Image 1: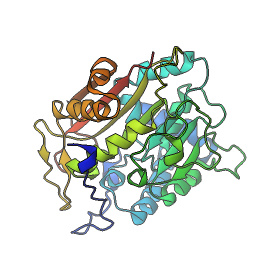
Image 2: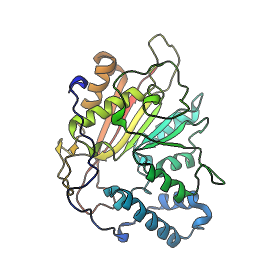
Image 3: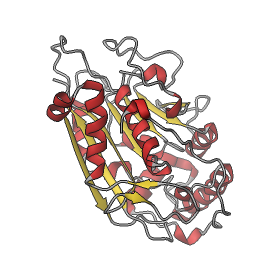
Image 4: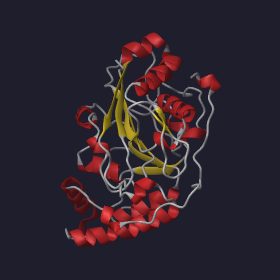
Length: 318
């Protein structure tokens, strides 16, 4: 599918049927998640698992009222799926050894739990290089309240959060592709050509096939890829994530009646090779873009069958 023929269908703001009621019994965090949450929440739970659960349930209810995503129903806003993507240790090690702090964006960050886990794991933070973007400001505000680390708190998070819609970004290249200075007012358009790492969890599967391609195209535009004349020794850039997929690509049997496309481990690499091939040329994409994709077991918290596509796109830049 060519970008010149792109057809975009935005996410529906209502569901064809009523979403299911919340079920506290689905809360089943692992030890890693409990350790993280107690670390992040500090005195507000004082290491007490029951106090932690009460707080999670309270904020789940508020988040679900804001927008009833199935991932909120399944407590995914406090589960640490980003760190479970296979490329994560490689990314973290590269970031720690980088000459300057790399720029990282979690797009569709919800309340920002994965980003805060990234800090716990030692990702270097300096000069606002750790970013979280979401379509809904309400989720970001709930994250500040849940973790008690908003801009006016006694311990503000170094993460910079902002709201924007990836589908509002133009297909045009960055105005200044050689510079990595971040704009004072963050927007996805202003981040073109600025990112080293980009994570998207539970994002692509919200859309149909052509819209997923359009999103991938815009993701590619956000990555900092120096011009050919630049001989700097940059580490690989990485786009990675996870979302619902299928063993064989096709439309997902959606329990809420939404029209959503499921890519497979075979079709997903072809999408990314196509995107980068259109932008930088097929030969460049073949030599510099490496895609991995695999189907994982169903996620916790989902009462209906699902298969998750876990993936990474590594872009060679030197």
